[in-house]
Amino acid sequence: MAIVCGRCGYSNSDDARFCSGCGTRLDSSADAPTEVLSPVGATDAPPYSGVAELAVTSGHRSGTRFELAGDRVTVGRHPDSDVFLDDITVSRRHVVLELGPAGHTLRDVGSLNGTYVNGIRTDGEISLRGGDELQVGKFKLLYLVSSVGL
Image (cartoon, rainbow, N blue to C red):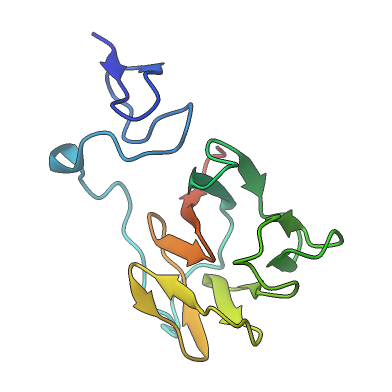
């Protein structure tokens, strides 16, 4: 039985947690942890080896996905940004995502409108977890991580 996305109408497989068309969470009641993560800084924590991406869930680029390739990914309105979000509510140099042993860390680099993670304005650096919702200007982006690829 297929799950139809309420936002975009895409028909997803019955075991999907997020819409393949737009990245929207399909059924939060079916969420269950799929892997155990070690706390950041734990000595026995394995190095991060997953694949990560940002899926735009709100804004004129809704449905667009950006693979987070490399150790440093820039997000902003500047055309040279790795994740280019062309809207006046986004600063030219808005956010930097840096890859470390435990995954990605987000840092707002002096944006005018701020950056929000799960609805809370960030100050300084914050470690991201799979499923976190980022707000950059008027865009909402879902941070997706998979140890087997996306």
